[in-house]
Amino acid sequence: MTDLRVSLAGLELDNPVIPASGCFGYGKEFAAYYDINLLGSFSFKGTTLEKRFGNPTPRIAETPDGMLNSVGLQNPGVRHVIDVELPEMRAYFRKPVIANVSGFSIDEYVETCRLLDGQEQVGLIEVNISCPNVHGGGMAFGTDPASAAAVTRAVKAVAKKPVYIKLSPNVTDIAAIAKACEAAGADGISLINTLLGMRVDLRTRRPVLANRMGGLSGPAVLPVALRMVYQVWEAVKLPIMGMGGVTTARDVIEMMLCGATAVQVGAANLVNPYACREIIEQLPVEMEKLGIGSLSEIIGGAHA
Amino acid sequence: MNFTITTNERLTEMVWRMTLRGDTSTLTAPGQFVQVSLPGFFLRRPISVCDWDGEGLTLVYKVVGQGTAAMASLQPGEHLDLLTGLGNGFRVEACGERPLLIGGGVGLPPMLGLCRALLRAGKRPRLLAGFGKAAECFLLADFETLGVPVTVTTLDGSRGLRGVATDAMPLLDFDSLCACGPLPMLRAVWRQTGGRGQYSLEERMGCGFGACMGCSIQTRGGSRRVCKEGPVFDGMELMWE
Ligand SMILES: Cc1cc2nc3c(=O)[nH]c(=O)nc-3n(C[C@H](O)[C@H](O)[C@H](O)COP(=O)(O)OP(=O)(O)OC[C@H]3O[C@@H](n4cnc5c(N)ncnc54)[C@H](O)[C@@H]3O)c2cc1C
Ligand SMILES: Cc1cc2nc3c(=O)[nH]c(=O)nc-3n(C[C@H](O)[C@H](O)[C@H](O)COP(=O)(O)O)c2cc1C
Ligand code: FES
Image (cartoon, rainbow over all chains, first blue to last red):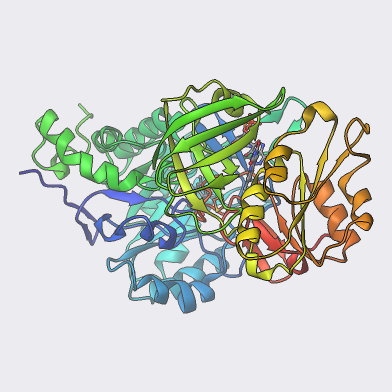
């Protein structure tokens, strides 16, 4: 018998597979394809205090083995999420869900987290610190240990639920950021968000994305994500949700060996709506082949 | 959803028609689209359903880049993974008795399925098709077989009337319209009719089924996903002025 259960600082999961924020909406579209209650959990679309339309289109570009997006955090705002999306979600998802929060100032993070923390369905808060700080010259919170710590401390002061800080990979020293978040009281670390990239249309000689630059994700980023999860595991004692380029059960196992307790799947859901179900079905088969009895035993197994 | 290619033939220098056999039960309206997974490409390609029945469907596509070029190289008997039944499609019941269907270039294919649906509903559609030149025309015989009046415009006058599709609109009798084609054409039709009619739009897509917000546009009623609430929008919803 294989055991897929894992434990994320206070949140017990039937399996470690979690669709990543921005790639699963509020789950509704996927619930039309399969019963999403078989997931460990899922992280819903990045939510801000006020509603945002996001960036102009084109927002999507293809890359070798991946994609760029510049959606720009389109979301209906936290009150609409609480009044409409969460009540609707009860009809098709019965497990605790992960609330992904974005903000452009510390006050905005705090207020959005406070409101979502009070929702019964929310099991865990994931704070996306890849957003630019409007009071800090537009530099992303997640690219500086001091600002990352400041967001963490402020959010932890209002949240009762576990708080995971989701790191940006667009930094020179990911371990330093993770340590700063740990010292500021984070309950766990999520990584990686998308890598900044761009593409140019050869005919028009202009960037494909209206926003010029966008975030790279998909299989192309897997080795970068594995490396960063590995480094963060060595730097902090906190549980890690690893993600970036995961498309198969074997990728999940590899991410867990690097140090992830749970594994998020992003872009793979967009090109194959059944991706997470297939991964969960395939996990016991791969575990059997590799002689793994319990998934929780392999976390960090790649470290000497 | 697994489909088997039954034919894949060239219609013009750049335009191909592919027929596929597979489960079409999720298709509910003309103007819906499929997302085609192509080996070697991460994102799927959105292509309108030209026509369909209980056994399979037809796609008509122009080779514009590497993905569509790969599609053109596929052989009968090969398999393709499709997500089908995507988008809203045209509303047949919202058309009058004499709808004008306007198709520009590869905006023409979904008009064929729409035309058959309108005929089944007892309406009398007519087609206005705009192309660059005579050699680029395709699918017109399929409309003629249905017995609907067909008007053609070409930019160089090598077939039908010289000019763009909107030039021919004042000559035609219609009480409602459905349009699909390049954005400049759609906008011209929209301006000429004061925003009447149904318009099928295109956007770059991440998923095609409403999950990624990659295809959002602003409409009078707020933001809408071209892949989910669209691709067909009522002209009154669009903000093209
Ligand atoms: C709802 C919808 C219906 C469509 N129906 C048809 C049809 O019936 N026949 C037809 O020939 N074409 C149709 N298109 C356009 C078709 O999707 C593109 O021509 C095709 O994706 C180009 O792929 P490529 O790899 O050859 O081009 P590339 O330029 O190499 O593609 C690169 C990326 O950009 C995307 N892309 C490029 N052009 C477009 C475009 N115009 N619209 C959306 N995405 C694009 C591709 O999907 C791919 O992800 C439709 C588009 C949409 C949104
Ligand atoms: C279309 C799209 C939208 C995204 N939106 C968000 C978001 O709102 N909040 C967030 O924290 N991450 C967002 N992400 C990042 C993913 O959650 C994930 O960190 C990243 O895509 C790497 O995983 P992947 O390679 O499996 O996609 C988005 C990614 C994509 C592709
Ligand atoms: S393409 Fe993903 S929401 Fe429309």
